Image 1: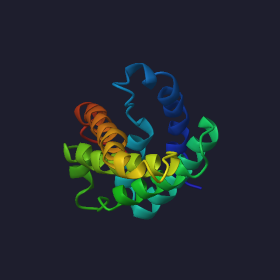
Image 2: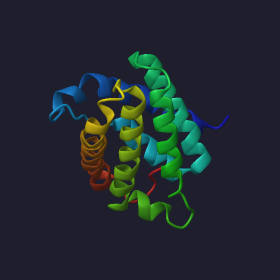
Image 3: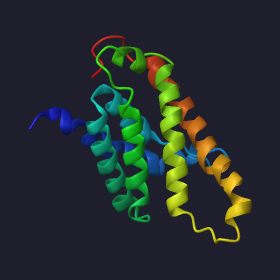
Image 4: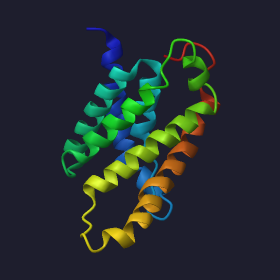
Length: 166
């Protein structure tokens, strides 16, 4: 098989190690950026929508298994985030999306979707608390991690080489 299918998975493991060990030290009010999602968005835009969906499923499955959390919540959220990021994969706009601030906006959108779905499927909210906690869940678990992940993704935009980034 081609090496393009194995490179994101090989990059995933060091990022998972950084995500679980170093990133909790730079959290702000319990909000941690998602490095795995940035990698997923990068490869989804770089390839296509089907590739992003399958890669999101693999990343979510491996994250659920290795982190020991509820199996399925990471899979569905990363799969839909990879599917969403794949919409921005086109032959003519690929370089524009990967090397401009559009990349951070795509990461913001995908991180928002990922965080909302992940918190929805993994949160244990009773039926009585859902009406009072739904807005709080939307902002604390969806918007704040999305903004923080998008800010971290600006580093990739600033320091990415202008040619040969694949």
